[in-house]
Length: 314
Ligand SMILES: O=C[C@H](O)COP(=O)(O)O
Image 1 (cartoon, helix red, strand yellow):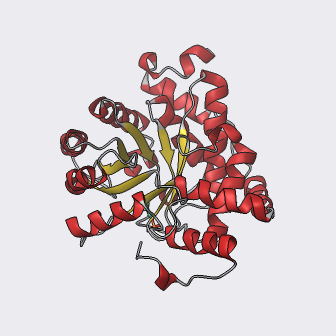
Image 2 (image 1 turned 90 degrees about the vertical axis):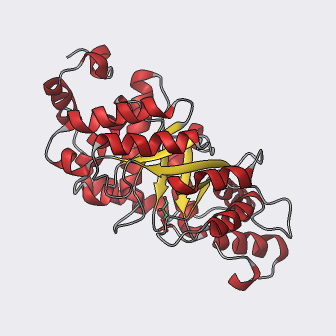
């Protein structure tokens, strides 16, 4: 298979797609874990820390994905996303508010032209187990209601059974429903078992048209981990080198502290490179990270530690 064909799935047969994905170099598991652990120990200067915190805030997809979500909770989350610290207007807004599709309209109304996007999970999130038509209807509704970003899940069962065609075609069909909305493809890496599978799923999603690849739903453990994110960052870096197209990465699930968020920023910088170090190309999906970022920011700017009670709930 020539390079030109290998990244254009329009002309690929299922067998060729399979051959391509299995032809990707294997991930050195020990090497990936060691490199991620080493990067995690990098310390950064106080001045750089202040910048990193603001960058991390601007990359947050502030998320609520609970069965008990209400329009009121979504409105409160939107208010928090637009003005994370009402006592300090220098705090940047978050990148997006991420909700279930039936709450998109409420979030869109509340956010108005604030510049905070609405992201909606779709395609039978989190399991991905529904007929394709139901998944597409879910996506269509979210886009019609004004979602600017769609976070879809891949069919992990199909992927693990080796039915890459099915996974690919669902991504293509979902992308077609997105119109102008950006498509984030959730790999749910905690279910993919191996780093080699994470690399294959990353390429598969990008070849099918993903604008972003996202680690996890946040509904299972393990969710985002530094080595898994490293493998995905390598994939977007290599995909751009091969195709010229840049794809973003979203680390999601279990990221709760400023320390962790900064580790991910170092990982992005050192793996994919500084081109990815903006909210356009890297996101952190989190339900409860923002308050810790705000507390650490306030401590840096005032020298005083404001406890969790100072800020509204995430
Ligand atoms: O996409 C975001 C995740 O669902 C949030 O996960 P989390 O509640 O562990 O922060």
